[in-house]
Amino acid sequence: MTWIPRLLALPLALLVLALPAAQSPLDREAERWVTQTIAKLSLEDRIGQLIAPAFDSTYLPTDSDQFDRISQVIRDSHAGAVIAFGGTEPVPQALLSSGYGASGPARTPGAAAAVVLGNPLALASTLNRLQAAAPVPLLASADFEYGAGMRIAGATRFPRAMALGAAGDEQLALEAGRITAVEGRAMGVHVNFAPVADVNNNPRNPVINTRSFGEDPSRVGALVAAYVRGLQQGGMLATIKHFPGHGDTETDSHLGLPIITHPRDRLEALELLPFRAGLAAGAGAVMVAHIELPALDPEKAPATFSRAVVTDLLRRDLAFDGLIVTDAMKMDAITRLVPPGEAAVRAVRAGVDLVLDSPDPVAAFTALKRAVADGQLTRQQIDASAGRVLRAKARLGLHRARAVNIDSVPLSVGGRQHQAVARTIGERSLTLIKDEGSRVPLRLPRDASVLYVSVLDYPANWTAAPSRTIIPELKQRWAATEAVEVSDRSTPNELDLVRAMASKYDALIAGVFVRASSGSGRLDLAPSVIRLLQDLARAASRRGRPMVGVFFGSPYVTASVPEVPAMLLTYDFSDLAEASAVKALAGEIPLGGRLPISIPGLFPVGHGLTR
Image 1: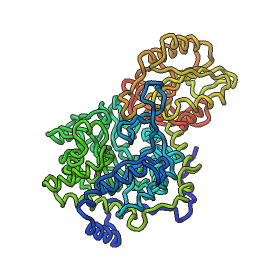
Image 2: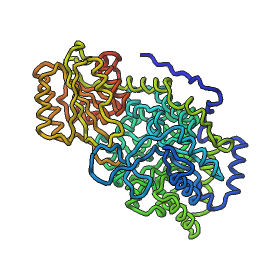
Image 3: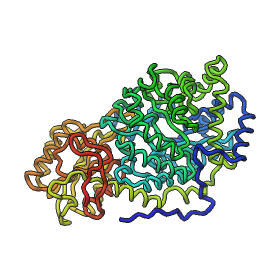
Image 4: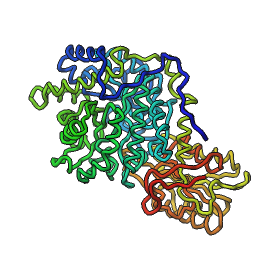
């Protein structure tokens, strides 16, 4: 399959000029706007430029409590920026079912919520209304880590970064970034909190995992740089994260404070390489991680609060003068340490420019104002950060126009051309790491009987039902396909029934779903499920029947079931990943992906079989 990048056939009015490199000077008009604007701002308004409250991108009528709430927060905190999430919907405060969808932080304090996707037209409309009410243009940001479709329904959702690492094509990484930027700007979003520059060299990392391009720092750096260039070509500010490197941790910072004990020379040789590459490519922002690095800060403050990390390392040693932003301040790594106001003060005192998604933005503003009054923070420091925020806005052209054309959203967001790029990445990333007896692709007649076992880490918190695409796709090729699901909830009797069933089929396919999911604290299959897969693999080998394990999500789980005779990696959870896997099993597309990480005890970086 040959993929040739091409510009989208969009009206000229929709094309966004590429951003200049973050280090390049602004033109005279933009610099004059920055100077004149900051001169007009009160101290309160200058402090507010450093605050970015969150809002949902589901439909918000102007006459609604939700719209009133975010409008009031922006006014009371004098916020100069916002961050858009998808949406949430209430779930019952009772254990009625484990499958109510992915859980996440509710925007209403004390409420339980399930995460849902936002709406592109609603997001553009809400941002236009917020922009119209703001005295200074708002810097609109979002976490579109694997495309705008990560948060917004109908937008393009790309495979995760590790899939790009497996495909190994910098042009594809650039194009994924560019398309994400085109879609984001069409909806009024200016800053993307991507790409992830972390080197995932710890198989037990519960929060980065497939969000990383891989474990080879030079390859990660090349893909980070390509993605940054793509975002900025599409007119969006790129943010490399999570500085100075979150890849070698075993604690999820959504749940606690990770500690990295490596010395400075190791950080320079490994973790910092992709960040240097991203900065050299022109990244306009850097997100600081909620991690502790004793080698850089003997006081053991989280990097978010560490002047040694933020000012000395990033500002001075790496000579970065763009925007420095916190990771979400609602994460437990921070909220368990200090209240929201103190957290904001400590971050800004360390050298951060933008306090992102505080649990209480108004408290953050009030504390920052008090800190200036009592001398904890200087006006000069506030002015310097406010100036960087305003320069980012000018670089994005917000001094000329802050609203977007709602009618243009359907022309730029989603569509077949964008989806074709996502499909190319997904198909080229598929990695066949093991194939005893050369069983892949499956040489089965159309009337062959196939047992498909959907193997879940746990059945709760799925935004989309796992195996919802792979089952009908298998049945299109082999009509006599039957499917069962197992998980940590399966009883011994249920697992024994699957063992007994397997002998009756011509082939066995196991779709294995293991998530490295922020805030879950989980990363493995249940021991009983591992034993099932081992038993099925041994039985298939004895009978001479093909068995293929298709691994969705974490590739490291393969190390727990080395008995599986054929292993295909997708690095993702999506309809696209499931459909692509079936095409590969049926021999409809080639296989050529290469491992961007090593599988301990099994396979090295770069391993992969070609079909």
